[in-house]
Image (tube, rainbow, N blue to C red; front, side, top):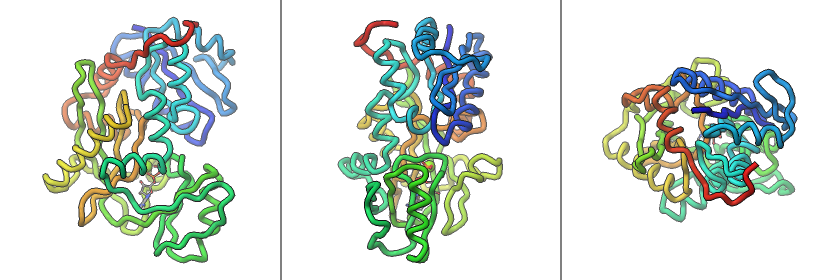
Length: 320
Ligand SMILES: Nc1ncnc2c1ncn2[C@@H]1O[C@H](COP(=O)(O)OP(=O)(O)O)[C@@H](O)[C@H]1O
Ligand SMILES: [Mg+2]
Protein backbone atom coordinates (compact mmCIF):
# COMPACT_ATOMS: atom_id res chain seq x y z
CA UNK A 1 0.00 0.00 0.00
CA UNK A 2 1.37 3.37 -1.00
CA UNK A 3 -0.23 6.46 0.57
CA UNK A 4 0.33 10.03 -0.65
CA UNK A 5 0.19 12.11 2.53
CA UNK A 6 -0.42 15.79 1.76
CA UNK A 7 0.47 18.44 4.35
CA UNK A 8 0.96 22.18 4.60
CA UNK A 9 -1.35 24.40 2.59
CA UNK A 10 -1.49 28.05 1.70
CA UNK A 11 -3.22 29.34 4.82
CA UNK A 12 -2.60 30.21 8.46
CA UNK A 13 -2.94 26.58 9.58
CA UNK A 14 0.06 25.51 7.47
CA UNK A 15 2.23 24.50 10.42
CA UNK A 16 -0.64 22.71 12.17
CA UNK A 17 -1.21 20.69 9.02
CA UNK A 18 2.49 19.77 8.76
CA UNK A 19 2.18 18.23 12.25
CA UNK A 20 -0.95 16.28 11.25
CA UNK A 21 0.74 15.06 8.06
CA UNK A 22 3.87 13.97 9.97
CA UNK A 23 1.66 11.97 12.35
CA UNK A 24 -0.25 10.32 9.52
CA UNK A 25 2.99 9.47 7.67
CA UNK A 26 4.39 7.94 10.83
CA UNK A 27 1.25 5.82 11.30
CA UNK A 28 1.36 4.74 7.65
CA UNK A 29 4.94 3.54 8.13
CA UNK A 30 4.02 1.73 11.37
CA UNK A 31 1.40 -0.12 9.34
CA UNK A 32 4.18 -1.31 7.03
CA UNK A 33 3.00 0.82 4.14
CA UNK A 34 4.88 3.38 2.10
CA UNK A 35 4.21 7.06 2.73
CA UNK A 36 4.82 9.47 -0.14
CA UNK A 37 4.99 12.88 1.57
CA UNK A 38 3.88 15.89 -0.43
CA UNK A 39 3.72 19.42 0.91
CA UNK A 40 1.86 22.48 -0.32
CA UNK A 41 4.09 25.37 0.72
CA UNK A 42 3.06 28.81 2.01
CA UNK A 43 2.93 30.14 -1.54
CA UNK A 44 0.76 27.24 -2.75
CA UNK A 45 3.54 25.37 -4.58
CA UNK A 46 3.80 21.58 -4.34
CA UNK A 47 7.00 20.14 -2.90
CA UNK A 48 8.33 16.62 -2.56
CA UNK A 49 9.71 15.02 0.60
CA UNK A 50 13.09 16.65 0.01
CA UNK A 51 11.56 20.11 -0.33
CA UNK A 52 12.10 20.33 -4.09
CA UNK A 53 9.37 22.22 -5.96
CA UNK A 54 7.09 20.13 -8.16
CA UNK A 55 4.83 21.26 -10.95
CA UNK A 56 1.16 20.61 -10.21
CA UNK A 57 1.23 18.05 -13.04
CA UNK A 58 4.17 16.23 -11.42
CA UNK A 59 2.46 16.26 -8.00
CA UNK A 60 -0.70 14.77 -9.56
CA UNK A 61 1.41 12.14 -11.34
CA UNK A 62 3.07 11.17 -8.03
CA UNK A 63 -0.32 10.88 -6.32
CA UNK A 64 -1.70 8.83 -9.21
CA UNK A 65 1.09 6.30 -8.62
CA UNK A 66 -0.19 5.80 -5.07
CA UNK A 67 -3.12 3.64 -3.99
CA UNK A 68 -4.72 6.46 -2.08
CA UNK A 69 -4.14 10.09 -1.11
CA UNK A 70 -4.48 11.29 2.48
CA UNK A 71 -4.90 15.07 2.57
CA UNK A 72 -3.96 16.08 6.12
CA UNK A 73 -4.73 19.70 5.25
CA UNK A 74 -6.61 22.18 7.40
CA UNK A 75 -8.27 25.44 6.42
CA UNK A 76 -8.83 27.18 3.09
CA UNK A 77 -7.49 25.63 -0.13
CA UNK A 78 -7.35 22.28 1.66
CA UNK A 79 -10.13 21.38 4.07
CA UNK A 80 -12.68 23.40 2.08
CA UNK A 81 -13.05 20.91 -0.76
CA UNK A 82 -10.43 22.42 -3.06
CA UNK A 83 -8.06 19.45 -2.85
CA UNK A 84 -10.95 16.95 -2.81
CA UNK A 85 -12.08 18.47 -6.11
CA UNK A 86 -8.62 18.15 -7.58
CA UNK A 87 -8.41 14.49 -6.52
CA UNK A 88 -11.93 13.81 -7.87
CA UNK A 89 -11.05 15.24 -11.27
CA UNK A 90 -7.88 13.15 -11.35
CA UNK A 91 -9.73 9.96 -10.25
CA UNK A 92 -7.39 9.54 -7.28
CA UNK A 93 -9.05 7.80 -4.28
CA UNK A 94 -8.65 9.80 -1.08
CA UNK A 95 -9.32 9.78 2.63
CA UNK A 96 -11.70 12.47 3.81
CA UNK A 97 -14.70 14.49 2.83
CA UNK A 98 -15.65 15.28 -0.76
CA UNK A 99 -16.15 18.82 -2.08
CA UNK A 100 -19.61 19.57 -0.73
CA UNK A 101 -19.02 18.48 2.87
CA UNK A 102 -15.64 20.23 2.95
CA UNK A 103 -17.13 23.47 1.62
CA UNK A 104 -20.04 23.42 4.08
CA UNK A 105 -17.84 22.60 7.07
CA UNK A 106 -15.33 25.31 6.22
CA UNK A 107 -18.07 27.94 6.12
CA UNK A 108 -19.44 28.41 9.63
CA UNK A 109 -22.46 30.34 8.33
CA UNK A 110 -23.39 27.63 5.84
CA UNK A 111 -22.97 25.05 8.61
CA UNK A 112 -25.51 27.00 10.68
CA UNK A 113 -28.00 26.99 7.80
CA UNK A 114 -27.69 23.23 7.29
CA UNK A 115 -27.92 22.63 11.04
CA UNK A 116 -30.99 24.87 11.33
CA UNK A 117 -32.69 22.96 8.52
CA UNK A 118 -32.19 19.79 10.57
CA UNK A 119 -33.49 21.41 13.76
CA UNK A 120 -30.03 21.53 15.35
CA UNK A 121 -29.30 24.50 17.60
CA UNK A 122 -26.38 26.82 16.91
CA UNK A 123 -25.48 30.21 18.42
CA UNK A 124 -27.53 33.18 17.24
CA UNK A 125 -25.30 35.09 14.87
CA UNK A 126 -24.92 37.76 12.23
CA UNK A 127 -22.80 37.51 9.09
CA UNK A 128 -20.75 40.57 8.13
CA UNK A 129 -19.80 40.54 4.46
CA UNK A 130 -16.42 42.08 3.54
CA UNK A 131 -17.81 45.59 2.97
CA UNK A 132 -20.38 45.62 5.78
CA UNK A 133 -19.95 48.28 8.48
CA UNK A 134 -18.27 47.03 11.66
CA UNK A 135 -21.43 47.21 13.76
CA UNK A 136 -24.07 44.79 15.04
CA UNK A 137 -27.09 45.16 17.27
CA UNK A 138 -26.61 42.17 19.57
CA UNK A 139 -26.52 41.83 23.33
CA UNK A 140 -23.02 41.46 24.73
CA UNK A 141 -20.89 39.49 25.20
CA UNK A 142 -20.40 38.30 21.62
CA UNK A 143 -17.77 36.20 19.89
CA UNK A 144 -16.27 37.68 16.71
CA UNK A 145 -14.59 35.24 14.35
CA UNK A 146 -13.76 34.72 10.68
CA UNK A 147 -16.57 32.76 9.00
CA UNK A 148 -14.04 30.41 7.39
CA UNK A 149 -11.29 30.29 9.97
CA UNK A 150 -9.57 27.62 11.98
CA UNK A 151 -7.13 27.13 14.87
CA UNK A 152 -8.94 29.99 16.69
CA UNK A 153 -7.17 32.50 14.45
CA UNK A 154 -8.91 35.88 14.58
CA UNK A 155 -11.37 34.81 17.33
CA UNK A 156 -12.17 37.22 20.18
CA UNK A 157 -14.77 37.80 22.86
CA UNK A 158 -16.23 41.30 23.01
CA UNK A 159 -17.69 42.45 26.32
CA UNK A 160 -17.74 46.20 25.59
CA UNK A 161 -19.18 47.65 22.37
CA UNK A 162 -16.16 49.97 22.04
CA UNK A 163 -14.03 46.86 21.34
CA UNK A 164 -16.21 45.68 18.46
CA UNK A 165 -14.55 47.50 15.52
CA UNK A 166 -11.09 46.24 16.52
CA UNK A 167 -12.38 42.69 17.00
CA UNK A 168 -13.99 42.76 13.56
CA UNK A 169 -10.84 44.17 11.95
CA UNK A 170 -8.81 41.46 13.68
CA UNK A 171 -11.14 38.70 12.42
CA UNK A 172 -11.03 40.17 8.89
CA UNK A 173 -7.27 39.64 8.81
CA UNK A 174 -8.00 35.89 8.88
CA UNK A 175 -10.92 35.98 6.42
CA UNK A 176 -12.90 38.85 5.01
CA UNK A 177 -16.32 37.51 5.96
CA UNK A 178 -16.92 37.66 9.70
CA UNK A 179 -19.38 36.03 12.04
CA UNK A 180 -20.60 37.74 15.21
CA UNK A 181 -22.27 35.30 17.59
CA UNK A 182 -23.84 35.39 21.00
CA UNK A 183 -21.34 34.08 23.54
CA UNK A 184 -22.64 30.62 24.45
CA UNK A 185 -22.11 29.70 28.09
CA UNK A 186 -21.59 25.98 28.36
CA UNK A 187 -19.07 23.18 28.55
CA UNK A 188 -17.09 22.61 25.37
CA UNK A 189 -17.61 18.99 24.30
CA UNK A 190 -16.50 17.43 21.02
CA UNK A 191 -17.13 14.11 19.31
CA UNK A 192 -15.77 12.52 16.13
CA UNK A 193 -17.43 10.30 13.52
CA UNK A 194 -16.19 8.25 10.60
CA UNK A 195 -17.82 5.77 8.26
CA UNK A 196 -15.81 2.56 8.15
CA UNK A 197 -15.26 0.31 5.16
CA UNK A 198 -18.35 -1.72 6.03
CA UNK A 199 -20.52 1.42 5.87
CA UNK A 200 -21.04 1.66 9.63
CA UNK A 201 -20.75 5.01 11.43
CA UNK A 202 -18.14 4.84 14.18
CA UNK A 203 -18.11 7.37 16.99
CA UNK A 204 -15.29 7.99 19.44
CA UNK A 205 -15.47 9.00 23.06
CA UNK A 206 -16.75 12.48 23.84
CA UNK A 207 -13.98 14.86 24.88
CA UNK A 208 -14.41 17.89 27.10
CA UNK A 209 -12.08 20.87 26.84
CA UNK A 210 -11.38 22.83 29.99
CA UNK A 211 -12.06 26.47 29.06
CA UNK A 212 -12.31 29.18 31.70
CA UNK A 213 -15.73 30.77 32.07
CA UNK A 214 -16.10 33.71 29.69
CA UNK A 215 -13.02 32.70 27.70
CA UNK A 216 -12.36 30.74 24.49
CA UNK A 217 -10.25 27.74 23.51
CA UNK A 218 -7.55 29.91 21.95
CA UNK A 219 -4.71 29.11 19.57
CA UNK A 220 -2.03 28.98 22.26
CA UNK A 221 -3.95 26.53 24.43
CA UNK A 222 -4.63 24.39 21.34
CA UNK A 223 -0.98 23.85 20.52
CA UNK A 224 1.26 24.60 23.51
CA UNK A 225 0.36 21.43 25.41
CA UNK A 226 -1.61 23.20 28.17
CA UNK A 227 -5.08 22.16 26.94
CA UNK A 228 -7.00 20.17 29.53
CA UNK A 229 -8.98 17.34 27.95
CA UNK A 230 -11.36 15.02 29.84
CA UNK A 231 -12.44 11.78 28.15
CA UNK A 232 -15.21 10.91 28.23
CA UNK A 233 -16.85 14.28 28.93
CA UNK A 234 -18.60 14.39 32.28
CA UNK A 235 -22.08 14.94 30.86
CA UNK A 236 -25.39 13.18 31.41
CA UNK A 237 -26.37 10.18 29.33
CA UNK A 238 -29.15 12.27 27.77
CA UNK A 239 -26.62 14.96 26.73
CA UNK A 240 -24.28 12.27 25.43
CA UNK A 241 -27.06 10.69 23.38
CA UNK A 242 -28.12 14.08 21.98
CA UNK A 243 -24.58 14.90 20.87
CA UNK A 244 -24.17 11.50 19.21
CA UNK A 245 -27.46 11.85 17.35
CA UNK A 246 -26.67 15.37 16.11
CA UNK A 247 -23.14 14.44 14.99
CA UNK A 248 -24.38 11.35 13.12
CA UNK A 249 -27.20 13.20 11.36
CA UNK A 250 -24.92 16.07 10.32
CA UNK A 251 -22.26 13.66 9.06
CA UNK A 252 -24.90 12.12 6.81
CA UNK A 253 -26.60 15.37 5.78
CA UNK A 254 -23.35 17.08 4.83
CA UNK A 255 -22.17 13.99 2.97
CA UNK A 256 -18.97 13.61 4.97
CA UNK A 257 -16.40 10.91 4.39
CA UNK A 258 -13.33 10.11 6.48
CA UNK A 259 -13.31 11.45 10.01
CA UNK A 260 -15.12 14.66 10.98
CA UNK A 261 -15.18 16.32 14.40
CA UNK A 262 -18.34 17.96 15.71
CA UNK A 263 -17.84 20.61 18.39
CA UNK A 264 -20.56 21.55 20.86
CA UNK A 265 -21.34 23.69 23.85
CA UNK A 266 -23.33 21.71 26.39
CA UNK A 267 -25.58 24.32 27.99
CA UNK A 268 -28.16 24.09 30.76
CA UNK A 269 -30.79 23.80 28.03
CA UNK A 270 -29.03 21.18 25.91
CA UNK A 271 -26.26 20.96 23.32
CA UNK A 272 -25.56 23.82 20.90
CA UNK A 273 -23.45 23.01 17.84
CA UNK A 274 -20.40 25.26 17.45
CA UNK A 275 -18.74 23.96 14.30
CA UNK A 276 -17.87 20.96 12.14
CA UNK A 277 -14.27 20.15 11.22
CA UNK A 278 -14.12 17.88 8.17
CA UNK A 279 -10.32 17.65 8.44
CA UNK A 280 -9.56 17.85 12.16
CA UNK A 281 -6.07 17.81 13.68
CA UNK A 282 -4.62 14.31 13.32
CA UNK A 283 -1.41 14.11 15.34
CA UNK A 284 -1.46 11.26 17.82
CA UNK A 285 -2.02 13.83 20.60
CA UNK A 286 -4.84 15.63 18.75
CA UNK A 287 -8.40 15.33 19.95
CA UNK A 288 -9.66 12.85 17.34
CA UNK A 289 -6.97 10.17 17.82
CA UNK A 290 -7.47 10.49 21.59
CA UNK A 291 -11.23 10.11 21.22
CA UNK A 292 -10.81 6.85 19.32
CA UNK A 293 -7.94 5.55 21.48
CA UNK A 294 -10.34 5.97 24.43
CA UNK A 295 -12.71 3.48 22.79
CA UNK A 296 -9.93 1.02 21.90
CA UNK A 297 -9.00 2.18 18.38
CA UNK A 298 -5.32 3.08 18.60
CA UNK A 299 -3.82 5.69 16.27
CA UNK A 300 -2.33 3.44 13.54
CA UNK A 301 -5.51 1.36 13.52
CA UNK A 302 -7.59 4.52 13.11
CA UNK A 303 -5.49 5.58 10.12
CA UNK A 304 -5.80 2.05 8.68
CA UNK A 305 -9.60 2.16 9.05
CA UNK A 306 -9.75 5.57 7.36
CA UNK A 307 -7.56 4.40 4.48
CA UNK A 308 -9.67 1.25 4.07
CA UNK A 309 -12.79 3.42 3.76
CA UNK A 310 -11.18 5.86 1.31
CA UNK A 311 -13.54 7.77 -0.85
CA UNK A 312 -13.52 6.52 -4.44
CA UNK A 313 -15.28 8.69 -6.97
CA UNK A 314 -16.63 7.53 -10.27
CA UNK A 315 -13.97 8.45 -12.81
CA UNK A 316 -15.14 11.85 -14.04
CA UNK A 317 -11.86 13.20 -15.26
CA UNK A 318 -9.03 11.99 -17.42
CA UNK A 319 -6.65 9.97 -15.25
CA UNK A 320 -3.36 11.87 -15.01
N1 LIG B 1 -20.47 31.53 20.08
C1 LIG B 1 -19.49 31.17 20.91
N2 LIG B 1 -19.68 31.19 22.26
C2 LIG B 1 -18.68 30.86 23.12
N3 LIG B 1 -17.45 30.52 22.73
C3 LIG B 1 -17.20 30.47 21.41
C4 LIG B 1 -18.19 30.78 20.43
N4 LIG B 1 -17.64 30.65 19.19
C5 LIG B 1 -16.38 30.26 19.39
N5 LIG B 1 -16.09 30.16 20.71
C6 LIG B 1 -14.80 29.77 21.32
O1 LIG B 1 -13.75 30.04 20.40
C7 LIG B 1 -13.09 28.82 20.02
C8 LIG B 1 -12.73 28.88 18.55
O2 LIG B 1 -13.90 29.14 17.78
P1 LIG B 1 -14.32 28.17 16.61
O3 LIG B 1 -15.62 28.66 16.08
O4 LIG B 1 -14.27 26.77 17.08
O5 LIG B 1 -13.21 28.47 15.51
P2 LIG B 1 -11.99 27.58 14.94
O6 LIG B 1 -12.48 27.07 13.64
O7 LIG B 1 -10.89 28.58 14.80
O8 LIG B 1 -11.71 26.48 15.92
C9 LIG B 1 -14.07 27.72 20.36
O9 LIG B 1 -13.40 26.51 20.60
C10 LIG B 1 -14.72 28.29 21.64
O10 LIG B 1 -13.88 28.14 22.76
MG1 LIG C 1 -13.03 25.16 16.70
